[in-house]
Image 1 (cartoon, rainbow, N blue to C red):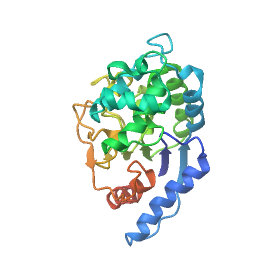
Image 2: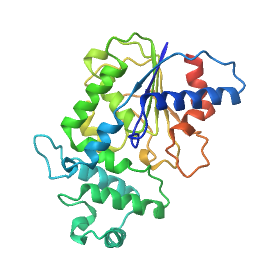
Image 3: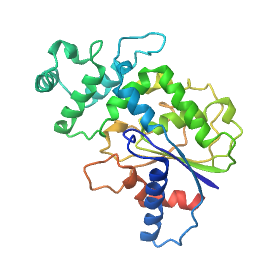
Length: 290
């Protein structure tokens, strides 16, 4: 049995080694606190695309100019969905825009206008805490870039495929966080993975049920079933990345995903991967299969 770790947003300053160390440390530490016998460290494969995503997000190509050969045009709708869910008003946007020196016409009617998607994402990250909604730092900026740039998404998919699947033996437990749950789900539903053996798939802080991710996911019913024996989805009820939505037949296309909301986290960062992995129910499920 090998462990697979797939990170999400805001990991440009991490490395494969640091992710392996931190995630395994969180799991083994949780097991110790729970009084469980220690386990030998298994083979760990880490998917890493953090710098690639950050560079694309900070580059000129991150500007939304509507659908094109490389642009899906979905970024505007994604950000608007988060804004609407948080109850962000036009006055909120105008005030935040004034503070940042952004023209008000860039955020008219509550949506980002052409060329202002990244700025709009930054405005929402300023506003959401005042609405009592926690959003992980840089999530909206990096998620908007990923969903908008077809070439970038394909490059990330190919990179992760090579790092966690190609030439590697199963069985494997896949643990994915944040945007990494979207990346891994897209890969697991491809025909080339149908014969793989994934006894446990753990998604943490996942935006898979956010409506505007659907256009870049496989259509419902387009695959018989991903090669997963058991799927657990952990979500803190105050982690706004998930919009409070479980993964269900209505959102993904099949049922049976275990919705785990008993997540221990007293910190401000409700999207923290370390807290997700340290939560007893999540840690126990991984321990049992490993």
